[in-house]
Length: 414
Image (cartoon, helix red, strand yellow):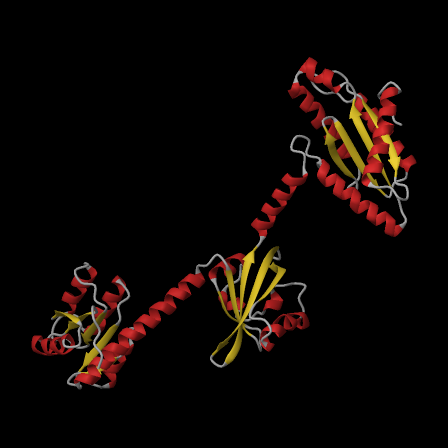
């Protein structure tokens, strides 16, 4: 029989003689032993922090005061401690009393030394296993990652942690009658089974998906799903680790906007506009359609800054950008090309339609009232895509037309 060092056992027995015999026996196996002669004494020492036993060996029947079952209930309110009951009787009344308390079994008084020590060792080992399992359960239950466990055959949820339940708005009772198909609106049974196939055949140990989960109230949220396959009680179960991507997608969107947007005017920047033009050129080459480009430059903008200050100049740029954004279509793209120069990309628009828009913008800008600033005008250059054009050739032609408007006296369209 192996010895176990540094484990403290509290022996609770109203017989000092029997308690000492038990203590001597267990001491020979390396246990540290403390004795309490009443249930009240055991509760007082443990609950007041005088003792912190790893196991309590408790007589179920005491001569006076509270019995072992009552003492055990009080002790379990103070902390999680494994309790093994000791009894001289096996009547059903005694057995039921033992069963009424969460315990690690019982041993008959007078049993052999080897049996007693074996039961103590098994109780301590079982407690460690249970403690580890409870720790894992608490970690999973309180994890910010949503965790779903369901049978592969029936797809019924076996367990769903608190984070998932609270986000979805369902109770565990409700989820126990549901499957992943109830959470992913666009997922059908065939597609779901296809997800598991590489796990079942062993070609993958984990699979990653992106989808939408539907809450009880009908709202949806984006999720990242990682699937793993395990075995539980002889049946295959799937574990899904799910991350709510709402915040991360919002952050990605925010970072993306910062990367492609001019912070002063809230229109796109030159880099993004160049990318959009490249995409549009590729699209019209395939479709045979066309698009137009408008470039505009605020007239005498340096005078605005010199006369009214840079804050006034910034106000002009912001107000003009807001006016144009409210005027163009959703499919159009506006960007700040540099300084007081701006460009507009107009898909499915020929040059005549683009000239009409440019003329309307020129007129609206010249009539716009900007507090603390004189009247503002701009010069516009308009071109349309021709076969073989590149970003550079289009921009150069639009820029040339714009400077033709400057040379023609400004505040006009060319």
